[in-house]
Image 1 (cartoon, rainbow, N blue to C red):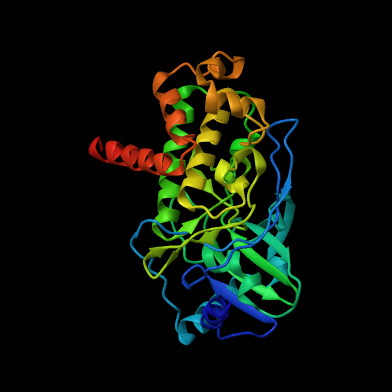
Image 2 (image 1 turned 60 degrees about the vertical axis):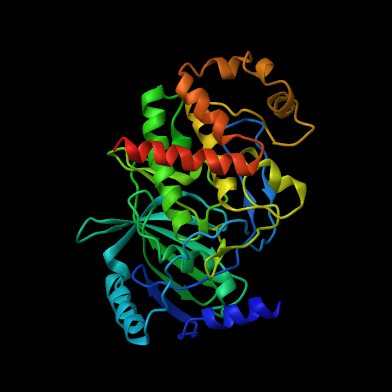
Length: 351
C-alpha cells in the first residue's frame, strides 16, 4: 500500500483546484486501474459483469514506456489553450447523444463557426478533488497518440464532473455493423486493431475491454480504439507486474481472468482481439463465457474438432483466418503471446 500511495503522490498534478485542465500534449505516469460494468450488444444473451480494481503483471521485461511529467509552464500554456478552445458555450452546439461508456456518457458537439466536431465524454466522480484515482482514464489517454487510437484533445475536471474532449469518429463502431463481414474487410480491420493494440502495449498500457463497441470507425474506414476506462499500466520501471481482478466485458474476457489469480496484461487483450475477429467473420460469439460450465468453451478446450462442425464456425471460410483465431484463442496465455509476436514478425518481413 505504501508503494502505491507514494506512486500516486508523485502522480498528482500540480493544479489540484476544482477546475483542472490538461491536453493531449501532456504525458504522465499511472499505475492503477478502475472497475466498472461492461456490456456487449452483439448477442441477445450477452451479460454485463461488475468489475473490480486490479493491480498489475511480470514474466518478461519490455522496454519501459516513456512517460514524462509535463512542466508547470507547459501545463499552464495548455490550460489556457484548452480554455480558449471552448471559451464560449455559444460557439458549441449539442448535436446528439452518442452512447454510454464504462463510466460516463458521450455527446456530439459541433462548433457553429468552424463546423468541427468533438465527442464530449462526461464522467461523474465521487468527489470534487482532482485525485489520480478519478483521473486515470484521462491521464493515460492524454499520453497516447496513434492513428488507431482515438485522440484525446484535452480534458477538464470541474467540480465532481470530468469532461474529456475526443476526436469524433463519424463512421460509428464495429458493433453497429450488421451481419458478418467479408474476410478481406475483417482482416483489414483486424490489422488496424493489432497495430493499435501493439502501440498501447509498447506504452505499457493494457486496454482490458476490447470489443466491437469500443472500436470506432471513420468514414474512410480507419479503426480507432476508444474507451480506456478499464485500462491499466502493466509496466513499472521496465518490468512487467501482475494484474488481478475481474475486469472487462464477459464475452470477451480471457479464461485466466475468471480464475481469481493474477494474470499477465497483454495476453488478455490478445484474447479479446481473437473474439472480435471471430465476431466480424460470423456476426456471433464463440461462447458466452470462457469458463468450465460453458458447453461451447468446454468443446473448444477438450473436443475442438467437434466445435469446428458448429454452424457459426462453419461461416469462417478462410483457413488463414481460422488459424489466426486458433492462435489468439489459445487457452495458455504464453502461447497466445508467442503467437502474437510471430504474427507481428511475419507481417513486418512482408512490408
